[in-house]
Each structure stands twice: as structure tokens, then as C-alpha cells.
Length: 363
Image 1: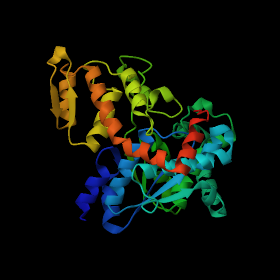
Image 2 (image 1 turned 180 degrees about the vertical axis):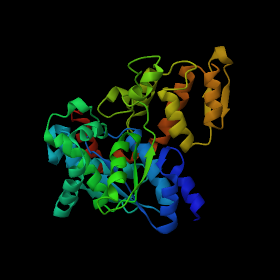
Image 3 (image 1 turned 135 degrees about the vertical axis):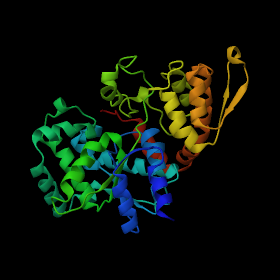
Image 4 (image 1 turned 90 degrees about the horizontal axis):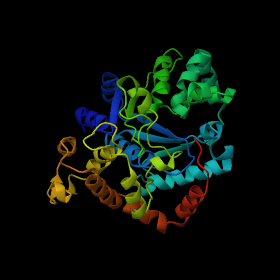
């Protein structure tokens, strides 16, 4: 495969940023099989973002000939006091995560799963943590807490400030060339780029993907221009806010009910979670979407062959929000059918899902 095709795969949606395109090209030209990673706190159910969106990017990387490591950050979840800070429960959540990705088409032999429990037995890893911590001020460590889903003022324990040095150390200890994470992890990845050469390592490429919007309305609507960045970071789909999320194993009835209630203002295409799902999931999976228009809008079934075409009609008021919701719900139900079938037929997977459904999810 030529370099241009590899670049196209790695930069295609849901990628929203590459730091930098020049560095990515040089990496692909000089290394036959670069290593990419994404990391996850195993602590709850898998929604469309940590499921489909992340899996799409992993599949792109694999097609481009990149080796992918999936880091199951059990100790990061423990620091964050997920699942009551019980490591045995967090490890079970990690097993559940593996099953979730298998159900989405990521076979066990296509990626390398690395658990923090194994990585952190190595004293050399902790030397890296200390090297990185020596370069970070307390102020900057607090500013990076977004990567743990927290605000600066929420740093109450010394362990909270260890989160970022550990995440950056993960990158170098795993030999990562490409940090492929959500855009909310940008601050940690930038630190890795800044410190890599200084500490005798390398400067990893950062490939950040889109964060799927949650189904709930923003805290302020319309969103003032000066608050767009702040508010967008708070409205991503989150397992700790179940009312904002569609889980990959939700039943058809649950998917329909959640989408019926979803925020979907007429003619508004920005900060519209139903359009977000349409753009990043429906048109990733399908080459068309059929929308049955309401009687007031003609009552016909209209076929859309691109997201842009659909977005433009929605902006003009030619699609009613409920019509869009129904079309997206039925298509999403079809897309997720293999996931429901996998969990219903795999005893171990079903056991982990029953566990996950029974735990209290905290932020």
C-alpha cells in the first residue's frame, strides 16, 4: 500500500486532528510497521463513542499496516476511584471491554491488549513516570486533568496528579509511535511530544478522533460563541451519564426510546447529537439513509446518498426531527444487531455484561 493511501486511512473521519501531518508522513516513510495505541479506563458499559467510533479508527490503522496496542488502564481507573476503587471489579470490566470490541469485529489476534497490571510490574516504567513528573509543574498537572474527566479544582489527592505522568509514561513504555486517542486526551499527548526528545525518547505523532456528542441538551442553548469550547467538552457521550448514551448492546426498544428523547433542534446542525450519529456512524456503515418524511413534508421516503446532502435538507427544515430520529434509530438497530447476538450467545461475555449492568457508574 502506498503512503498516500495510508495517510488517507489514518486521517479519515472520525479523525479530527493530526499533530502533525508532516510527522505522520515521515513516520510512514521510515517505519514499515509503526505502533499506535489507544487507552481506556475499564469501568462501565461501552457506548457508541468508546465502541463504534474508536473501533472505526482502529480498523483504519490496521488497514494502513499499523500495529495497534489497546491499553486497558486498570490502575488509572483505580486512581479515579472507578467501581469503588476495587481492582478485581475493574479487571472484570476490562474483560468486558475486550468482549465488547470482539463483538464489533476486533478479533483477539488483530490487536495487542495490554493491561496496566502487567505493565506496571516493571520498575523501569516507574522511572519513566518520575522523569516525566520532574518536568511537570503542579499547575500544569492540574490543567491536564481533563484527560481523566475532571476539572482542575477536583484534584484532591496526590494520586490525581500522578494520572498524567503515568499516561505519558505509558506511551514511551509501550513504544508508541502514534497516540490515537479522543480529542479530550490531547493535553497528555502534547506533553509526550514536548518531553520525548528531551528525555531521550522520541516525539510521537498524535491522531485525535471526534468525541461523539451525548443525547442530552447542552447546559445553555443557544450556546454563546465565547463558551463553545468549554461547553462542547462537557456534552460528550459518557457512560457516567447514562441518559446521554446509547450502549452498543441496547435493545431495539431502548435505542428507539433514547433517540425519541434526544436533543435534536429543528434546522440546527451544530451540537445536534442525532446528526452527529448520522455523520460519524450511519454514513460510515452505510452508503445511504432512507428517511420517511412526515405528511406535512410530503409523506414520501427520501433517499440520501451523503451526509452533506442530508445535513443541508435538515438545515432548510425539509426533514422533521422526529423523522430523522426514526430513520437513525432503525439503522442503528440494524448496525448493532451483531453485538446483541454476540452477547446473547457467548456465556462469558453475557456474564461480564450482567456484572456491568449491575454496578454503579461514577464520573
